[in-house]
Length: 586
Ligand SMILES: [Zn+2]
Image 1 (tube, protein in one colour):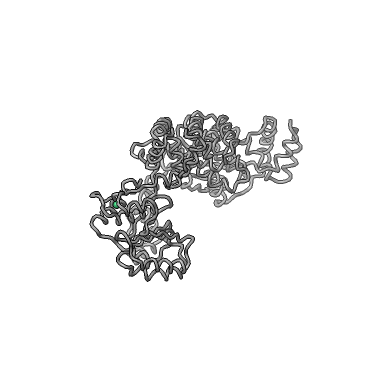
Image 2 (tube, rainbow, N blue to C red; image 1 turned 90 degrees about the vertical axis):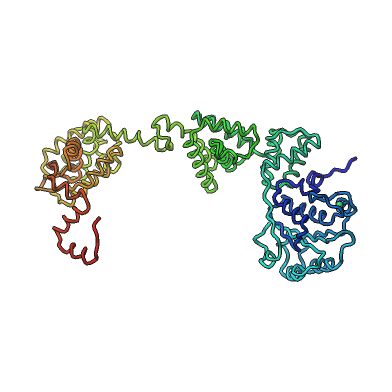
């Protein structure tokens, strides 16, 4: 039986040109060799499995080649090259600092350093994971690193550059190896598959490349696993199942459900995913990255960021066309929020389901309001509509507000009220305990209650228990009323906030409007305003006069200098202060 060699070893590059994904770096090394400008020490940094050791070996082999090629590569045929290829060269020493990090190991290495090479020009010492050396070992090594014999070259490799001491960094030429791109990994895997006679789908290789996360060695070992699992036929579905990766198919379907506001299908799909043994948190993270891919696919400028196979790219572009950018933003935000609260949540499944429901309602918001806002905002117009209808019919306001007057009034009032025959005695008995005005105007009372209140109102006007109130209380209640105006009246509310109701006798106050239009608005609102004030100030005699401001009254607030003049008229000291501090009014 033929010996099985793992792909990572079998397809380990033997020349600089066959190293995948590090072309600029290998070119620099080749040039250094060609021009004979070799340093004594190199530091190769980068994530695991990106070719650091491989490059170090190729480098050692190339500088020792007896008849190097013109392009800077080794010949692969001379005695030295063959010794390297067969792993019996005495010119290369590898030390894994992760397991040999003691002083004794370094002493051993120092001894080796003293022996010149038998064949070839250089002895190359590769120290892998050099950051793992102990301090003692490191100090023992430092001397040799500083002044090695002319035939010695050190190649230090590390995955954690930040752990390398400055004393080492300053003595080495540093090369940063980059993570493998998904594209490069796929191309290499495809190449290996072709040589081995396996059939592969690009999407399957894509999955492997993504799982390997930039490491070629990892990618090749996953690839080997998949080959044995699928008997050399690497389809997307099989690889998905084997790697326990959730197929992107689910996410494509899910987004379609979102767009058609199909909440039940979303829930069923999530249930299916859970039944397959996937975790909700990962599912949401996957959904977030799917939405990100859609966002990237939406714009031709960002399309290159989409590291996927051609067929998948087309699918993303196709789905992205159906999605509004706002929808994508909003969905990403929802996924992100869900992801953040997921770990703390006691009901994780519900957490994900809420997120899915919200996503499915994003486009529903478009249909109703055309604003593309979040689902909870859809509720607002409905709520304010209810408020509007109540304001439009003042009778309702009366019905809601009248009982409160009763609640806050004296006991004698209570008695009067209790003596009135009502259709619903229970309701009238209960109502006084509640402060309805705190609950807002959307509360509707039953018709029986309304009937009883109307009766109460009549009795109330008969009673003569109006309470006196101060300017201060009036101002306070005015502002309370303004604060409670619905959102559509925001502009008017802003104006009213700046108006000051002025008490001109015990029960009548004056309000000054800047112009006729505002006066008309106020006139329209008068009934509602008075109902509120009469009720809250407990005085049924309150009257409101609306006056249009005199021209100079309006002018004095039209500009800041004018306002300043007005203030100076009232207080001359202000002018002194302005002059003293050399202030300018602009
Ligand atoms: Zn050679």
